[in-house]
Length: 92
Image (cartoon, rainbow, N blue to C red):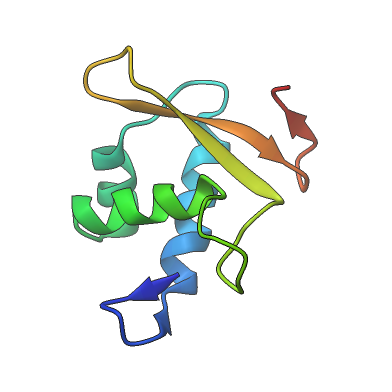
């Protein structure tokens, strides 16, 4: 995941976000929850969740072993683990 368009990757925030999602599973989480846990802004937390959506085109930033999906029917939007190969979670 690039930070600020400069090619920097915040792997620590990515790992902490995964940790939080796994800790709360099967409960949904909000972007603000990720922000508080990682110590990042809510905008950065949302970007991390976008990264976990698997929709970062076909490049080094594409993730396929840990995926989340958004529930837009909830307000605020909540996020759930869809696929986590490390923990054996498969929602499909």
